[in-house]
Image 1: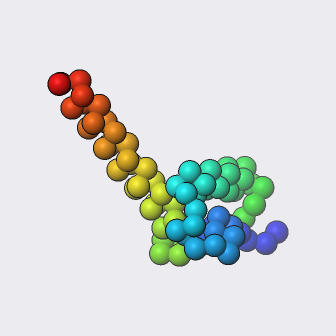
Image 2: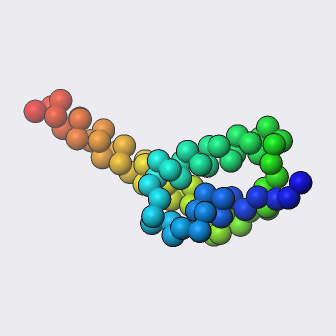
Length: 78
């Protein structure tokens, strides 16, 4: 069984700015689920070239959610 490169499998030849966070998260979930089930093997990761893509999407999603919560809290106090 060949090993899958996490980032390359998600990017599929595209630049990371061409993907939405939702696309990155969905592809990441699929790959990690397949890996946990033993359906695929992953290359040993180095954060800078594999999981940085997922970490960036999660960070941006977290910032977006924090902003939305803050806006809701401000609205409730008004």
